[in-house]
Structure formats: C-alpha cells, structure tokens
Length: 297
Image (tube, rainbow, N blue to C red):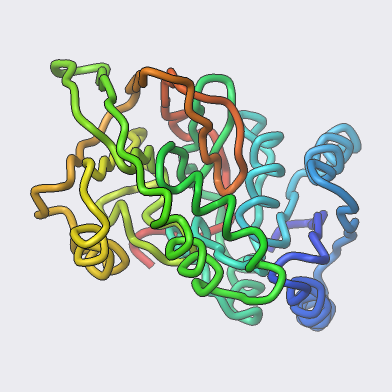
C-alpha cells in the first residue's frame, strides 16, 4: 500500500457512473485504512491543473478516477516525473486500464490500487501531443466526433458502435506516405491509421492485439482503403482482434513512424481531437510508473 493517495475524480465520467463508483471506492479505501484526499474536476483539462498542483504539493501517488480522457490528462503531467500513477477506471471505455489488466469492477480496481507495486509502462507522442493509449487519423476521428453525443446516454461499447454506424456514411480512404524509423518507406491508402500503445480502443475494439505497453514500441495498424460492405465484413474480426491476417491490414511495430497525407487531417488522441498530419508518432519508453498487475500475475 502507498503511504498516501491523491485522487483526481471526473464526476461526470461514464455518464455520471464515475461519481457513484468513486463513492464506493472511498468506502473500500476507508475500510482498508488508506490515507487519501481527492478533488473533483470541473471542466476540460482541469485534471491537468490538479495534477500539476498535486506535484507541486509533493504528492507521490496520484490517481486518475474516470475514463481514458481523465487518464490522459493526469498521465501527461506525471510522465517522466517518477511520481506513481494509479487508475480507477470509471469511464465509458476504460481501454488503457484493460491493456494493463486492471479489473473493471470497483472492488478489483481498488484492490490493485492498494496491493500492486509500481511498474514502468510506456507513453507516446503524436507531434507535440501526448497520448497513452491510441492516436491516429481517418475513420476513428469521425467516430470520436459522433460518439460524444451518445456517451451522454449510454455506457460501454454502445456509444462507439453507434458512432461507427453513423461514420460509415462518411467513409473516405486517404493516400498516406509511411516512413518507419527502421525499414523502407511505403505508400498506401488508409481508412484508419492507428499508432497504439494499448491493445484496444473505442470501448473494446481490439485493434492492436499484439501490443505490449511496456516494450518501448508502438504497434502501427493501418486499415487500407475499402468499401462499406468489406468494412462491415471485417468489423467483427476487428472488434475481436482477429483482423491481422486480413489482406486489408498493414501491421508492424516501431519506436517512431511518420505519416504524411495530402491535406492536414485531425488526430484522435485517446478520444480527444487535436494536432494534425503530417504526424510523427513516437514511443516514450518507461515514461510512466503505474500501479498495475505485473505481466506474470
């Protein structure tokens, strides 16, 4: 158990479920005799401000309580500081916490918080923008845009699937020049270009089943330009992580890769939109010290 925990809580995460689960977590922390304090976020990027203030106050274990967006904000401040990051995954998707094998139930997540030892995991950058799970461009940017309105009404993967269905109307592959740090550059078309530190996104779509968040590399998954019918046929395999053998998929690992498109395209950064192509994705090996089960556990 850490000497003390400082929890940064997004009370509206998971369509409001986050605050309810947080109160349950507090009861479990109290029962365990844990010392902690907390603060609620009140607006976008507030978690970053709270994390910086906590660092300045000397906190040594800061816990992101919410979804992947809250985690992104807190982790961006803690990267390369040596301060321990904890996760209570109470958001809509909670994708990166699943890559770290953190239980999705409140009791299980609190148990990891109390008993796990810190382990080093990677983060990453897309140009100057930080991400911890997945960044990319193409189809998923439309999905993020449309998903936001469904997150207010639904939890889990449903908002993303509704976003996918609406985004199908805008299916638009783009030419991409891909330049890995090692290996030859190549040209392709991309419906979806993803640089992955975690294994999944969109509430459980396993687009990078071979990813290891602690290997110092990003898993690059490119869905080449295909039509709606071919996409719908591939989607069930994509969700299950069984798509890597498809002729429509390009998949490789790299520490650094640059992607250039004819026009500037907005990036998805852990479910938020920002920066744009051309983009260089780069792993940040061991940037985070996270309370999570070790791979052998």
